[in-house]
Image 1 (cartoon, rainbow, N blue to C red):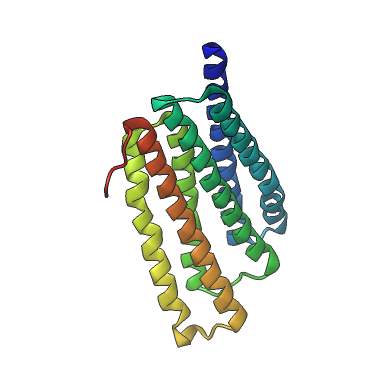
Image 2 (image 1 turned 135 degrees about the horizontal axis):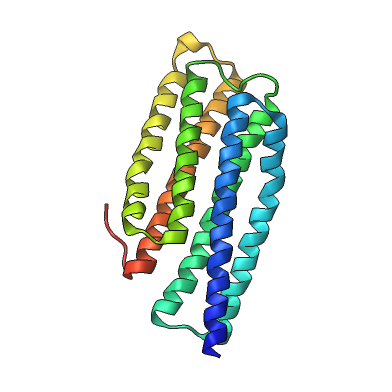
Amino acid sequence: MRDIFHSELTQLERNLESMASQVHTAMKRAASALRTGDIIVAEQVIDADERINELQRDIDDLCVMLLARQQPVAGDLRHVISALRMAQTLERQGDLARHVAAIARGRYPEHPVPDPLFSLLVKMSDAAVETSASVSRLIEEKDIDLARAISDNDDILDELQRQSFDLIINPELNLSRQQVIDAVLLARFLERFGDHATSVARRVTFLVLGSTEER
């Protein structure tokens, strides 16, 4: 019975790693679609989001089954609960990548906003891609130093979002109402993506250490 339990825990971990990898791919493609205006890449992100959702449902089902049938305690319980919550967070990151891609697709063949605001949003999307790569590696390696770095780097996206607001209200850009909406949403989606990465980092810290670390 114990061997079956550990086999199921291993499967849970593999599903979580696969989900994190797919979220990274989604964000990478969403950033590319935003930068280049490639409508095909944008649609790939939107279509792939359902696969991320399916993985999240699979993880939920497996976690509920493990809790009901195995009644894990201590470290094993922490493992299951952490996986359950991280899957929910990764699913939200997948949704955010889809939202970025949808804006890129909706403004095709033009960019959503003019420079220098557009370049700043592209910079934000690149930072989100780097963050998603780190999260994917973190879930696989459980490196506490990497978890700390992810939390610290969230300040980068926060600062870029603040800079984007300064540009949005700059009258010299003469943004249309739609451009203001797109810019605010893109900045918010990308900033929230970073927040969710920090949430995953804290969950991994809790999983490894049994407690969270204050920043």
